[in-house]
Length: 188
Image (tube, rainbow, N blue to C red):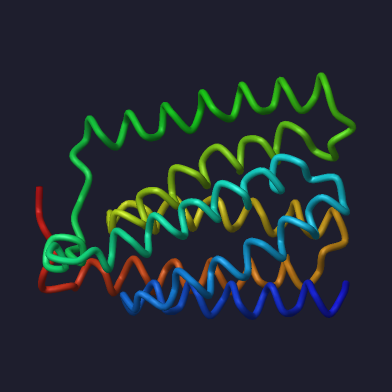
């Protein structure tokens, strides 16, 4: 445990809470958190998680743009449901990415937990993309991912981070409930 890990966890919780509240400040605060986590994950050899933080950094910028783009605020801020085909395609993409990354990490690196880390990374990218697009289905996916991350981080001795993911699980439930009640929810 380090002070830096605690700072990253607090920033991450703040960012996700702001996401639930549909406050665009979630994106720059989240960016700070993922940059800190990239360094921490490198130190404990969770290389897929480290790469995920780099992708998250890009998705933080994408989400900020998506939620604040000039001239399209009304469209950008509407919560919507993914149609079944898009949902299945996203999950298939997460699976393909997980297998490819897991094979690479287990073959060419000394990664700790290469398959679990890769699987959580693959599906986290899908959930984060859906979150940036304000897709309601991001929250149930986050719930599953967050619970699995708790175990991974406990195993690695990242206790603040494990606690962070317990809190994220609770916040994901809250996000799912709040976004489902959003009067602007697009049913499609």
